[in-house]
Image 1: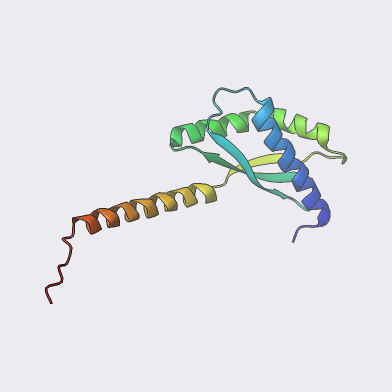
Image 2 (image 1 turned 90 degrees about the horizontal axis):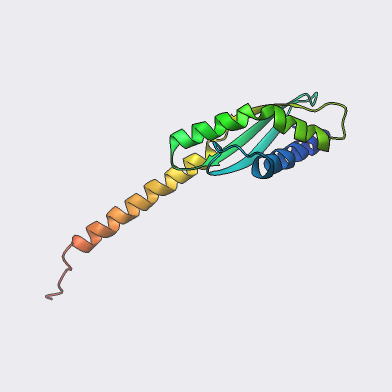
Length: 131
């Protein structure tokens, strides 16, 4: 269970990293929609695991965007340190959050199954009531 201080630092990290990625990085490799879904801060506040969700259909674009963000980690940390009021700024470890990707894939499967069901239903001859 995270302490209040960890939660507060995690909130600042999340807001700062989100703002930096959205507004301060001018890297053409960053494509698609990038969202910071979760931040886990260590008990000593020295490390933060930052979970990113990169929403795009192209796996190559997803990898390229993630690599660009990892490449900009020092710049992102500098931006974060300007917002931090504590003595230390946590080291950022970026992780890809696949939960949203998995959810989107599940929705695609459901949509495909619903479409197939409608097609089969439309192809079935209607039952006539001869009684």
